Length: 182
Image (tube, rainbow, N blue to C red; front, side, top):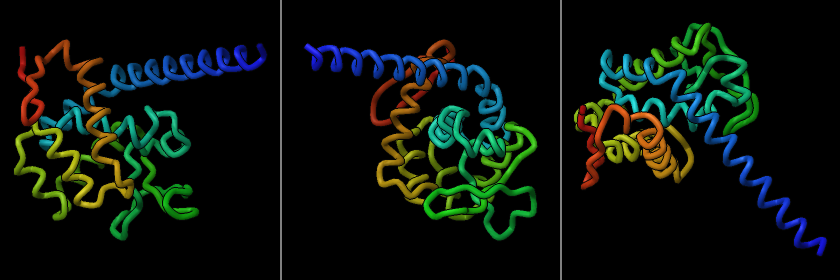
């Protein structure tokens, strides 16, 4: 009998966690979708890619790094960075990450980071609606170390479309996911 209650409690707790995670992602999208769209217009980085990366890299704005530094994309300092910094454990202990005055600055730097670095230039040859190509390309170019990063991005993009873009886009599924303005 105790085992049944423990299983029921565990199942209920997991359901509550999933609901809280979904609510956090919905709030993240509602808060930052305009920033992502404006960055797509400015630089060509697809808004869905930007939102999906922001959700994954910042745990929908709730990670220690994003709360301490407004860094929603896990961008490390790199040698050319002259702005504010914060130190955080990631692949190694106490790594240097960029810190921003606002989340909007983080979004702008993320777009510039992708647009200005030669290892990401091939992405801008892709159709902006080729989210799978962008996801696998980001992984190929070295954006993240996780071997399943592209798959996680694709799942996050599908979630982004389900929650937000379906109101503004119709999604055609084929070789690539293609948003069509309604």
